[in-house]
Amino acid sequence: MVSLGRPHLRHKRDYFRRATRARYEERPFRNPLFPNRQKRNLTVFALAGAGIGMAIAIGSFLCTAPAFLLTEIRVEGTIFLPPREIRVEAEEYLDSSVWFFFHPSHRLFFREDVLRQRLERSFSFASLEIRSDPPLLFIRVEEKRTAFLWKSGEKTFLVDGHGTIIRELHVEETTDFFAAPQPYGPFREGQVPPKPVPYLSLTDLSIRPTRAGATVLTEISWKGVEQFEMRLRELGIGIRSLRLDSTLGTWMTAETDKGYDLLFDPIQDVNRQADHLAVVLREEITDVSNLHYVDLRFDDHVYYK
Image (cartoon, helix red, strand yellow):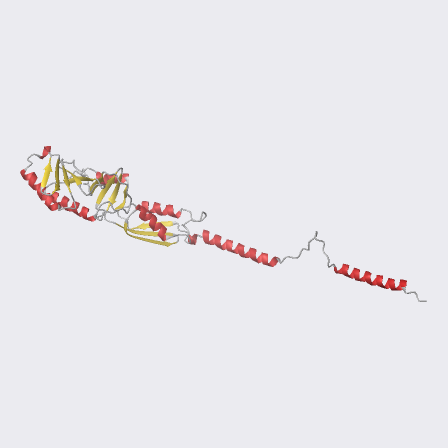
């Protein structure tokens, strides 16, 4: 009789033990409380960090390098307009903010059209040239020719022959424009007579707000004023100033150096109005010392007081 129990069971037990030990040693199971930590590839992060650092360094160089900064402003072509006023406007633009952190004083953030619009809001030029060549910002202007002065409230403006406002006249400049004319002596020896007022002054009684570049008078109206003023000079009459209400029409009142006013319409036939004035002064009015006004606006009907 052969016993098969114990040796056979021992053989199976040894096989199971070896198989179990092999599986354990291979470690196919992982404790979920201790996840496997894989090694990270640090090369990718190192390259990304180096790229970001290089980009920051290049950006800092471009934003701070003196070769890209506008630090000098040169203004040319001005005649009556003080260059410092244009320079102040340009400096305020260069010091303004772009995207909170940058300034237009850097070549990369400078915009010629923005500076042009800013200057044209304050002044009206015949031509305007702007060039940026760091460190120099070059501005060349051609001024419009001043034809007359426009007063509205407390402000006075220079206006060209088309009736377009050139710029506002500052207080310190008004002396040369509004000093009372004294073309005749007597003067003391060595005394220089005051300069006469070079431009006619038109006062808008409506006190309508205006700005540089706006049109306050039509070109036809101004040509009529010029022609009427020339005809009055032929009659020995000078105009000290003009008044009108721009909201009501084109009628004007001319204050003369003879002490009386002339009411006229510059868009009508001013030569005919001047002829009527000459007739009235020659045939109707013998003493102008008591004359207050002459109204020439109604064609052949002339009224005076």
